[in-house]
Amino acid sequence: MSENPIFYQSVMPVSEQRHAGFFVQQSNDCSFSKATNAVFLSVVEFAKASHYYPIVFSGDDNSLSPVALLGFEKEQNLFIKGRSTWDADYLPAYVRRYPFILANTGSEFTVCIDEAYEGVNQDGRGERLFEEDGSQSVYLQRMVGFLQQYQVESQRSQTFSNHLKELDLLEPMHANVELNSGVKMSLTGFYTVNRDRLKNLDAEVIGKLAKNNELEWIYTHLASLDNFNSLMERFAATDADA
Image (cartoon, rainbow, N blue to C red; front, side, top):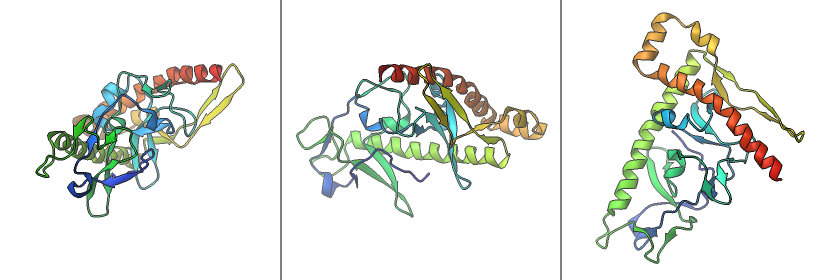
């Protein structure tokens, strides 16, 4: 899956030549994600994420992916509490891997780091990236492994999304929100599964979807749409505070 690093500011490939002596101090500060209303979500995350976020699909005719919807406006993340705290018990892997990212360089993916992240330092704070002999630290190895597995799940999730499109199960989503204050919002650009089209699928197709877990993912996606109500409540609270 090729990425658009929406909130990374100064991304550089991780290398011993550049990052010897660099450390990363992780924190619960998620303020870097304040300016996005959706983040990629892999199918392996559906079960946990469906308790908190509407899961929808985003992309174009060539490629679709599942995403966790975080807000109604384009640069609005309603799950940031205060200035930086993530206000949900499940944090999507897309956010958890920060400040690391896999960048598509054409023929392969390269592990990069956002050097603008406040936890990236040369003061010995947190976990080192490279050992004195130039080898990857245990911490960096763990993060590389996490990113590699993330990429595998990304590809599987994209394949699933494109299969839904091939079966003509997806329809454009139109969500209209009107608050007591009179503020009106219209959310477009995302897709959801059409329940009637799903019911009308051939029994053999349904059987195949069930066998490869896709039917379970579809129903989890549909159940997650109930979270639009709680998302509206978050938006209403923000509007009331304005």
